[in-house]
Image 1 (tube, helix red, strand yellow):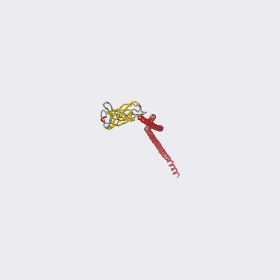
Image 2 (cartoon, rainbow, N blue to C red):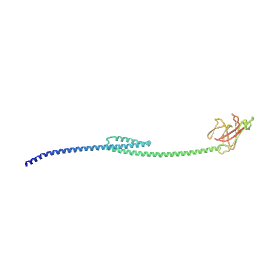
Image 3 (cartoon, rainbow, N blue to C red):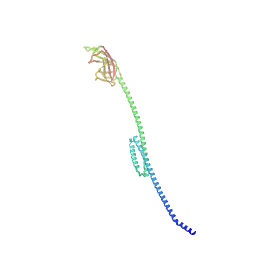
Length: 313
């Protein structure tokens, strides 16, 4: 029994080194696996962080591009409202567009750093503020132009009203002038139309038969008129035959209130404004006198003086 026990102890002591070698391998593999896992986790985290950063940078670029697009649209609206009206606004608009081009070029850089991205963001904010100020300036300018336009419209209306008043005054003045002219023109107080026959001895006799009449005698008296100007005056005579036709030459014309009229003959008298009587004689050298009514109309001072008629048998 004693021998068996010793053998057993030897057996056990001979197996101990083998067990230790197996444990070291296990530890080695465990460490290797842990290192591999740690490496994988490290690269996973690293690449995941890089991907997230790339996504963040791309998103920031897109947001800045959208903001730049909005700013450019505001510039287009400002220009459409009349930015060219002032040199200062034109210069500001050109400067803003140059800054937009520069920002777009910078944002196309794939290797943009965080500092450069932040700088671009600040420049976009500054540009946005600048364009906002330009928009306010254009709005103020538009309001100013509207006020000027309203003021000009009111001034034009005042000028128009003044011109209307002037025209009204001139019209009244013309009416008054016409009245004065009309009032100052001479008129006949009485007028007679007589047919006369000229005898061989040169004497004249009144006659009513058309075939015996040689001339028409016009006797008239001019009424006193304190407004009339004394002196030489042309008396225009229009004679209408029994057929209703004016006896006149086409080139013999005078004016009455701006209207052209033909006259049969004219004579000059000396107006003395003392009720003086005047006489005129007229003979129709081209035709014999006809039976019927002859009408005589006298004109002076751009107005009619009077009329008379005679019926020949």
